[in-house]
Length: 102
Image (cartoon, rainbow, N blue to C red; front, side, top):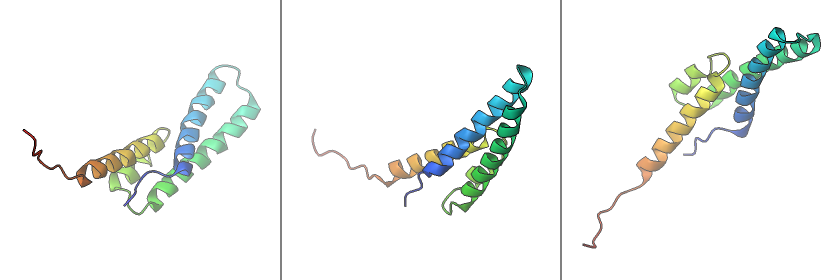
C-alpha cells in the first residue's frame, strides 16, 4: 500500500500558503487592487482543493483529513501527516533479523 501524497495536493498546499502570505503583504504595503483580486480567489480555491483532495484519499488517516481543514497551513500539515504515516509503514514492514556473525 503506497500512501505518498499526490503531486497535485503538494502544489495546492504550497499555493494556499503562498497566497495567504501575499494577501496581507499586499494590504500592508502597496495595496494593489489587481493583486487582491487575484490572490483572494486563488487562496480560496487552493484551500478547497486541499480539503477535498485530502478527504478523497481513501487511506489517509483521520488526522490528516482534520488538519487539511486548518486555513493557511492545513495543507502542509496534512502533507506532513501523510508523509509521517508513509514513513511509519515503511519501517514497520521491514523485518529485522538477528545477525549470525559474532
